[in-house]
Image (cartoon, rainbow, N blue to C red; front, side, top):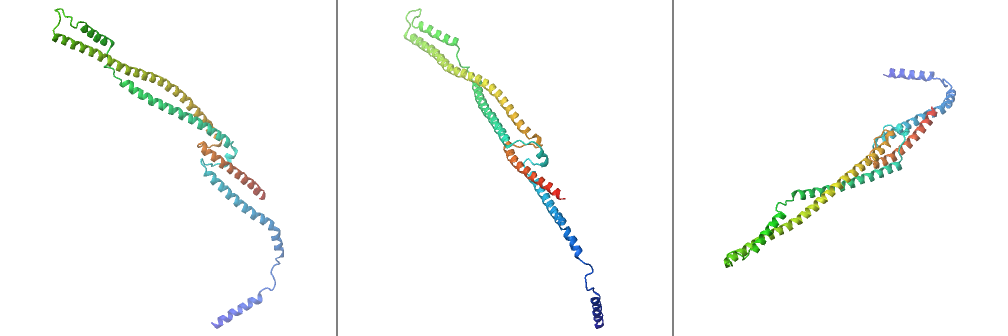
Length: 276
């Protein structure tokens, strides 16, 4: 073992003796070259850093656009399309709201009219006047009463007995009561008839009103549909199916910001391209 260690020491001594005492190559020219390349290296490092930052900004911009409702998947296309202004969209929103309110008001009136009409229909169809005496029946009852009254106590065989007279009086009273009952019934039924006639007149008037309101409702619905179509058409060039005007007002505000960011990014991209 001692011999092996002595051999290793001798080998190390020889390597130390053989080591050059001066540099194998003068580093000065390499330092000059590196100094000359430094601006290019700095530009390359700056270009790479700017390119990475630009790609990150574009990615974040795309993610933000995709989160919109409705989502924007092609911001470049949107940048080229004519967008409606928020003022124009707010004006369309107000017009649509007014038209929708008009439709709802007409529908409410129609519902009320239909409800009243249904009630009148029940009243008029359920009316029963089978107990109403005719004018002829009243006249016959009165005639019978008057005849009995005229014949009272005037029999052909002289003065009637007390029993006969009493019977005749009861007959006259019965005929009078029958005639009066017919008259009273006719008066009561006449009042019901008057109410029925009034109900039928109201029924006819409401039917006319329903027809008028339905025509107005049709026009109001057409107007609302026209406004809605025009509103949707204002976004047609964007390739976006718009949501409600309230939603799109917020959407437009966000899109304006995204387009401004995109313009900044594209300007930066041109600057970086000039560094290449």
